[in-house]
Image (tube, rainbow, N blue to C red):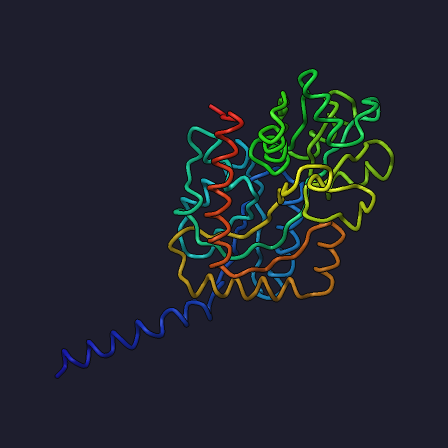
Length: 320
């Protein structure tokens, strides 16, 4: 009888533990790794979440910038972290492309993470230095690249800017060479100075320079024109149907993180994304809010990983 009682008690405890864990979480500060230097769009999103989730939790969400190797160093560190919800990753599209680009990233995007949600997407804008006269459309850029090799600046290997350029190469069969930099700021600086004449850049950090006339916008990679750049056509409407590349900003936890903790994280992030001041801040950064489910995010990761594997293979854009 006593053995039966203990068995029933154990079952009852097992049933309530997950709910209790989620109710108590977080009981101490949480760390969110951004695998890029401070100042870029991913850092902006992480710090916005940090401030608002900290208010909800009564516990700080500490942002840690851990850049290097196109985001692989910080991403691999989170993949190896304890699956307890106290180490999170603010990831970008490089999560799905880097395993094809690099010989060894140190992580598997499908196997090593518990997806929470995509916070939002933004576009890449193709820009040129004002001295590169006569290149005002993507067709102009294609013609130029058919005549001679064109270098293009990107904020890093595997990021949406780099991927946009590689996809354009595979569609047009032109000679274009990515020039990766360690983040958005130095990449933009290289085009502003004319060191590199063309850039595939994140919209949020590039728009001020376009508005000031220091850079000329050619096209955006979003499926529709952007309100902040209404006169700039999409790549798709510039003669390349179906062309779309997202700058994705999503939250992941290490694989094995309890489902109850993932659900709480998901619910709390959605609460943050519903706040008017957060929506205004993301809109100002030209980031479209998504807030999908963990299951939808997992499907997205699988599909995008397969998509970029094909593009990388076709373009030959390997990093040893």
